[in-house]
Amino acid sequence: MKVSVILPAAGLGTRMKSAAENTGTSRKQFMLLQGVPILVHTVRKFVACQHVSEVIIALRGDDVEWVQDLVSHENFQKPVRCVEGGETRQHSVENALASLAPDVDIVAVHDAVRPFVDAETISAVILQAAHSGAAIVGIVPVDTVKQVQRHTVRGTLNRDRLILAQTPQVFHAALLRQAFEKARLDGFVGTDESSLVERLEQVEVTVVAGSDRNIKITRPSDIDLAELFLAEENEKVAG
Image (tube, rainbow, N blue to C red; front, side):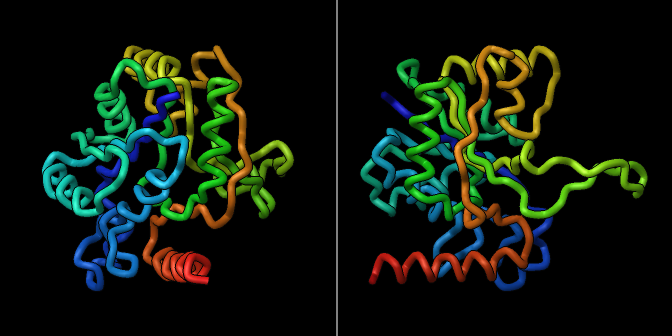
């Protein structure tokens, strides 16, 4: 089974501007955690997974060369390559998808700024998708969720029927290609890859339990939590 992982990393990080003074960049995927870009921490997690065959990073055109040089110095034992992304996440993933070899069986898409996904979760969602065709990682919300209209509560949603979607989101390669083609023809823009696959109505998307540690680093306040999580990971490895 050949599994390719796509990391869309072409975002501009507009919500990170207030943290730029300390890091030299407002682009969250390149911010440093213990001296290493967040993106590299994320790549390391997938390269270490026995089920992953290769990692593809989708970037802004100006970043491709220097990021490829950056990852080459990591001496990864699996192929890690960079491709030019697009103006949106969906375009970036589609460009990376087009670069895959025909013999790729499974495609996983993961947020480049979720560096704390654990090995067990990666393996579980890949194996589930290999079996069922489509699987995503998600967690049940702990807060009560209200449905509102113009700042007025219209109802309370049953949390037992809700999940907060995370990544990786994993699919049979042919299915994901078909989903992107349909979205392009229809002019549909989804919030994640699963939303594109759901529109096909060919398979049911299975949910694999995620973790509240699998955070998406999007705001300056997330950096402090990320530093704590990384320190804990390093302690565990050293211990």
